[in-house]
Image 1 (spheres, rainbow, N blue to C red):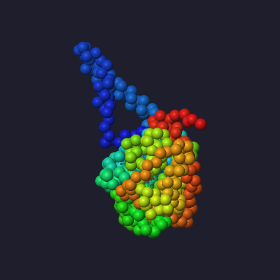
Image 2 (tube, rainbow, N blue to C red):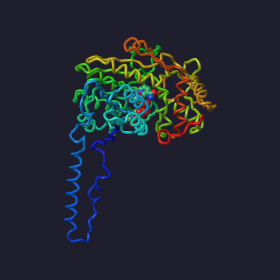
Image 3 (cartoon, protein in one colour):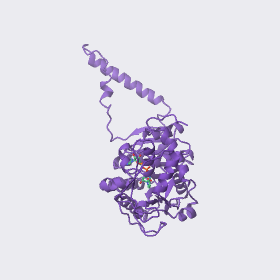
Image 4 (cartoon, rainbow, N blue to C red):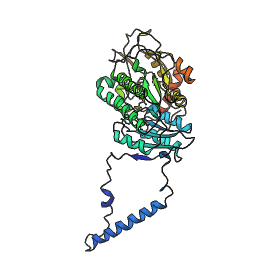
Length: 417
Ligand SMILES: NC(=O)c1ccc[n+]([C@@H]2O[C@H](COP(=O)([O-])OP(=O)(O)OC[C@H]3O[C@@H](n4cnc5c(N)ncnc54)[C@H](O)[C@@H]3O)[C@@H](O)[C@H]2O)c1
């Protein structure tokens, strides 16, 4: 069941209509006022009667009580790219899911897809709320019996973070504090936190292990590192089970074509490489701008570790299953293999079949030359390894969804062969 719940702090645009809309009595009648009162009272009594007869009247929502054998996961940012894929996987694995999202960057269309796939009562609810609103967050935790939180919600563009750092510290660091406080106050004992390889900055030694010093060089990475520090400090005196997953560059989409990556058009300029490649292939932008060709890498372009979203959400489920009270696990989630931007662009040309025009430009502030993971720890401790490591195949799958959803989630199109 999808219940589109509105938190109390949001405006109710139709509030003034509720009585005014019943202005049915003839105003010329002398006894119109009494008639109105009588009619309103009768209708109110009828409504109460109908509500009382409704089977759900005295039954608290399934989301508000713990149920043996059912794990209820709060997925923040579940209308976004990674969060929606994680919610799909959790629902497929029989978890109960509550998504909280302010739709600032996510898509209601993704929620609709999940709703259509899992319409049964007690499976999925969506709550439209901003995590910066601490009162609303506490109300959500009071009304729902969460067993675990996967905290995805965040603004997540390196370039944007250099232009608007305060937005990043607020949205990432301070909102994580709000979520953590609510978890502590309401006794929610498991947290899976979305962190990033951007917290490592530009280490001298590759590959990056979890022991690599964290010296972030842009506000996005710094805000995530601060959020990690808050979680770790809190954890010292708590029995919370904490898993911090530091993702590398996420690509791909649901192999069955139900979900995809659909960032806001206005964020295109800050966007990630896969989005830009697809936009160029569809002619939405004239071509690709590869920023930086003089890095100390074999072909001069940046090197990144691209992790398929299907593998990434699998790592989350494994982290949730293995989370232990009082224990913190910190894991890199990557393939362990770096690919250059030039390599990526070539794969994108092949996947889309479009000879994308490429312009080579100077470096972008805040980018680092080479980043790839050492995924040994997550393999040893969570028994997780990346399986979808064929870059071309990941891009083909993502392109199929992009081609069928030219306007993101708003207007699905029938795919051409
Ligand atoms: N995409 C990547 O390559 C990548 C890499 C490393 C880490 N991450 C992390 O993964 C997480 C998800 O990233 P994504 O790529 O899916 O981004 P996304 O923008 O697609 O999704 C983020 C979601 O969070 C929601 N949100 C943002 N601020 C909110 C707020 N204040 N209250 C409620 N909802 C809010 C947005 O509306 C959106 O639905 C982020 O924490 C990001 O830092 C992503």
